[in-house]
Structure formats: structure tokens, C-alpha cells
Image (cartoon, rainbow, N blue to C red; front, top):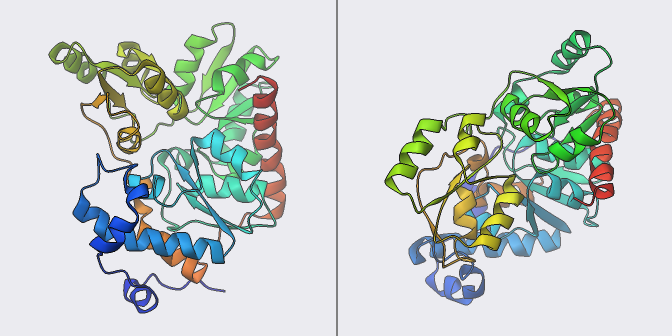
Length: 350
């Protein structure tokens, strides 16, 4: 069935979506998780959508998987499971619901479909892409294999199903170093993020890592000078960077880790001031959990992640629009690479 065209007015015919301070008050337990970053008037706007989605997902036997870069209203209001790419990939293998709604970007929904070919996987906006996923094709992987014969291809999950299918094993920023170190080959091809590969090369010096020339539009915009200048102006701030940032940025940071690694670090260390050198919603989603931490400094917004909104999630569930499909042969090959990542991560205790 062809997806219906997104229509806010059609939603209003079926659901009471008018701002409601009364409903907002009734849902105070949910709001308490984000009241530091979302104002009461804004919560009165969000609450009717949150209530409608949470009711509808039960009727549809659906679960919502939300990435750490989702906005707080999604992350705290409607998600059943939250996490980084590895955590969501693992959770996708465990859910029993008939429908998975992926609040993230398209490659994440593809990964869920690859791991759950019999389930319906929805993404609320088909235009929620990824600069990394768009930077490489299966032909690009073939070029790297031809240039480095015999070298295994470790592909970041931020890629299309076709690229995963052309690879030997996938990785995420939270397990890349361990996976590369565990492979027997001396030369390892990493695609498509050159900065992640360069940062991993420093962590695993016993391997020769070669990489594709791709980068994340969020993280490549940070510069070492920006970080050094901010530290000079704010010397008591703990600077925490994602490994998709350029290596000189990571070198300026006090800590570097995946989205889950960043969350673990901040919860463990509880610095008085913290600057998260990553996507903006990271700090917003943990602000209420850590009132003792002042999250400061600049951040960069991912335009793709921000295409996912409460309104679009409700539309997707209401119409069952945005179903993600992966051709069977491609899915079968890609599943091998993703499952190898999951299995090796578990074997390594990650």
C-alpha cells in the first residue's frame, strides 16, 4: 500500500491534539524526566501527542526504539528503549512486538528490518538520512578491497544495507576498537568514517588501519582550536568528545567515547561543568538525571535526526506509513555482518 501523504489536519480529526495544561499536569511523572530542558508551555503542547502515541502503540503492538540523539520529548516521552546504535541493534533482536518504530535515521531502521525480516519496521520520516551512509556505496567497498587484497572490511553501522552486505563485519563507535583488535588480519579496512578510523588506529596501534574518506556532518564541524579556545575561557569544564570528531579534537578532550560511553562517563564522573562535543540532544536527554552537572558550551544539531518529531511518529503509527523494506538477498548478507558484530561484542563482554 502506498504511504499516505503526511497530514497534520488529518491527525487532528482523529486525536485531540490541542495544547492541554490539564493533560500535562496528569502526565507530570513523564515531564519530570525533562522539565529542566522543556518549559511547561511546551510540555502542554507535547503532552497530547505523547498520550496519543503511547495509547496507539499498545493498540498496534508496537515498540519505539529511540537513538540518543532524539529530542527529549521523544527520548523520555514515548521511547520504550533508548541507546546508541549497538544497543538499539541488540534490542532489535530481542523485541517481541509486531511493529518496530525507529526514532533515528534510515540506516537504523534498515538494521532493525535486517534483523527482523518478518516484523513491520517503520521510520516516521523517510528523509531522515545520514551523511556517512550517503558517503559510500557497495562499489566503494569493492574499490577498497581491490586496493588492499585480503584485508577484512569493518563497516560502521552508519551505512546502507547494501554496504553492510558487501562487508565482513559491522561496528559501532562503542565497539570498533575491540572488534578491530580481535580480527586476525594485520591490515583492516574501515568504512566510511575516516575520523573514527583514525581515532581507532591510535587505540589499536598493532593494526594497520586504512579508511574510506567519509565524515559525519555533525562531528566534522568541530575544530581543535574551538575546543582549545573554550577550555582557555572555561578551564574548569570537562570536555567530552565523540570519536567521529577529527583526531585533533579528540586529543583536546578529557574523554572520548561513543554516545553510550559518554553517558556512562558523565554519570560516573558527575563533573560540575561538562561540554559534550557531539549532537545537541545528548546533553538535553540527561540533564534532568544529573542536576549537579551544568552542561555548557556549543553543540551541533543533526538535521536528519531532527526530522523525527512527535507529530510524524503519530502519523506513522496512525497510517502505518514509512515501512522500511530491504531486498531479501541484500538483507541476508547484511545480517551476517551485523550479527557477527553482535556476537563478537557479546563474546568480548561489551
